[in-house]
Image 1 (spheres, rainbow, N blue to C red):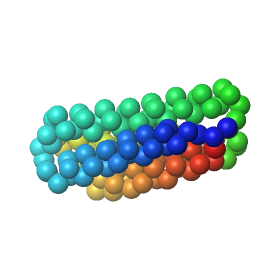
Image 2: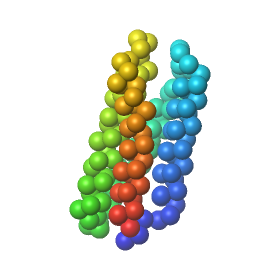
Image 3: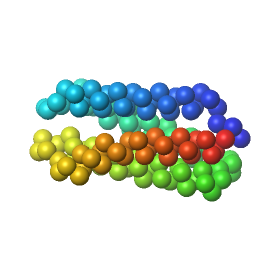
Image 4: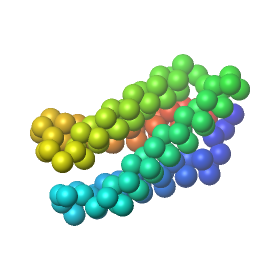
Length: 122
């Protein structure tokens, strides 16, 4: 079973949009622009749901290998951690440096594990 190129391209485009809006938020400084912050959050959530549905369908078809399942599970955990740290970073009170560092690191781990899972599922 091959992952259609359109699904991989859609996931890549969504990740790029998340990174772009996150960079824009970071550059705009505090207080965060509410509309941009909500767009950033909603696109992140949409990406997580899109990938979850994609992997759920592949799992139902029985085509996922154990390495693909492991990479998909890691991507899910990284997504959850990004959402939690993002919520903490967006609070009015500044987050601890460790939380900010994690929120800067975890998106890259999320993209890498998502890409690995998509690649291994093909």
